[in-house]
Image (tube, rainbow, N blue to C red; front, side, top):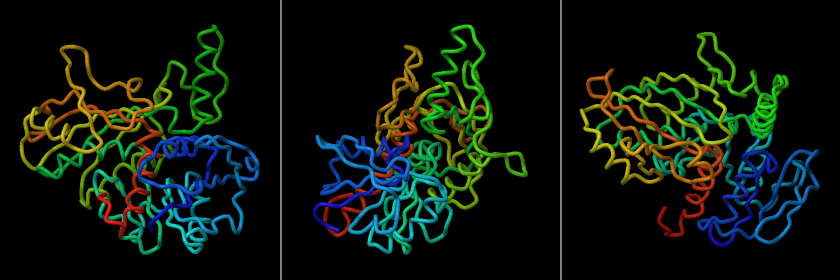
Length: 344
């Protein structure tokens, strides 16, 4: 594909859809002739700003994908399963943010800093955007894996309300205001428990083995992205009272020993990563500092006390940005560069 594109956002009025529009507002990689905003009938007719203009949200219905080059799906898995194929049949490349196709063998699961070459391998015309916590993890794992190999991963996540959508973010605000005012927080609807001055070790549903589906995503998606089918990934996923930006405590067993300073150099030279690691000055990544920012930040790099060839470190990334919208737009950039001679 060359020249200006017609780009569609499906789920344009949700948290990720809004962030996609924000990323595209200033994106340099995609020359957009038309941005088509698509949502449910409830949101159809809403007008939203984009690049000095106002765009009307269209209803997701037959014929809406005509002429679309790239369709960015930011809706539920059910919506993606129902509408991805019609979008492809209409001529679009689908980049899907749901979990619907991530583990399908014929759908690439892509983080551009890790496996950009797989964008071209899309026999169904669909590219999957990984889970937000997985993206943040693998951006940091990739340079270590390229250098010496990653053999085992233990990760605990500290995931923001934004991962559960706009309603969960508002619940965090309203319940916190209630508690600060001396009242009981209202019963949560978007989350299983109130987040006001609270956290809980449950994201998504529990499986038969007592791990959650979010923890399964981190296991199976990391294996697929890094190309290591037997990689051991032990994840515990926790929702915390942070508005946006996920944090993760990571311990890795490597294929060969590595000193922390060598790891910091790898991280600093890797795409999509910044190093903030001056504990003596109380400088390390914090979610408030990286909310709205593009890169994933890494710090607290140190020798593991659990693994002989291990490192422990801390990573922070904006769940809505790199964990969702930005990653999808970076994939779209790679699609647009195909056949143009433009470096990816």
